[in-house]
Image (tube, rainbow, N blue to C red; front, side, top):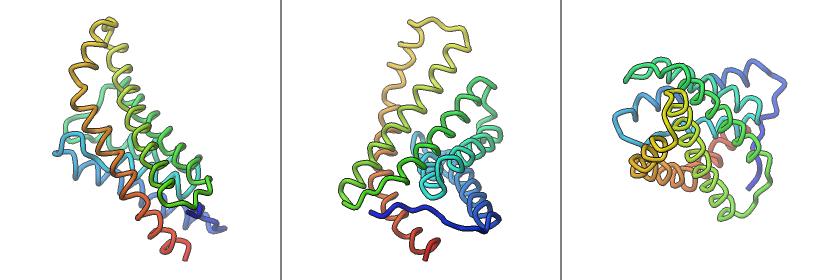
Length: 183
């Protein structure tokens, strides 16, 4: 699989397309907000990093999550949780940028690497936000562990669905976007 990197001297075009990805990520967050633990924000941010590189991926991740979390239909996140969400998504966009630099030609390997990336990104996000919430709320380690155990069903569904989305949907989108964006 060929790596997708947008080579364009037209900075405005690149920023415009990135803005569309940010808006898409936010919109998909709102659309799927009624479906517990199924979302396309993570894959959209990862994809923006894949297409535009680590720096733009980090920017897309931070902005997407900052907007979505600030105007969440269920209410804005507390500041410490908001910061953990924004940082997590910046990391997700960055990881997408680094994966985009790999030259993976074998489709099965490509899907496996993307699937593992989805697993890692979702696990990282769940762990980071859980730690931020519990530690900033002044909870004890016992309460943290208890909360993680109680949430294991939700975490499992979220991690599983994102792993499947990354392994199945992202390879198709990457091939299609490669043709559309890069010709």
